[in-house]
Amino acid sequence: MTEPDCLFCRIVSGDVPADVVYESDEAIAFRDINPQAPTHVLVIPRKHIATINDLEDGDAGLVGSLYLAAKAIAAAEGIADAGYRAVMNCNEGAGQSVFHIHLHVLGGRALSWPPG
Ligand code: AMP
Image 1: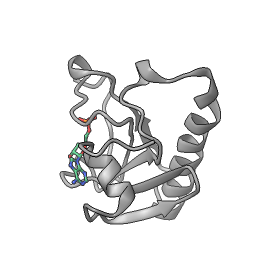
Image 2 (image 1 turned 30 degrees about the vertical axis):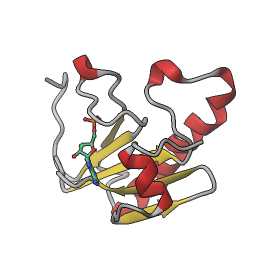
Image 3 (image 1 turned 45 degrees about the vertical axis):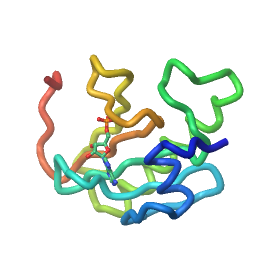
């Protein structure tokens, strides 16, 4: 399922270019256009899901695949041992600006907690 007006669906389809670093049957990952850390990769499902609130029971495996992708990306980027963050924002109040779920994989610098 894709949404023609969705930026990340257009990256999945190849209509919009991206610096892709990982691909699987269920997910792709690409570098954030406005990186907030030396490594800042977005992992997204190929399937259009607008927010965490739109997940269904059948999406459990798909969400798991996003975290397995994050693990592989962290290893490939050399940030796995030092530490990294894999976080998903839900709705405007949490900072979500693109309504196709995506896991931010951030690392390569010290990350404070709690986030702002
Ligand atoms: P969020 O604010 O959690 O929805 O995250 C959306 C992220 O998408 C932001 O970090 C943006 O910098 C990033 N972004 C927006 N457009 C693009 C694009 N064309 N390619 C890569 N990253 C993008």
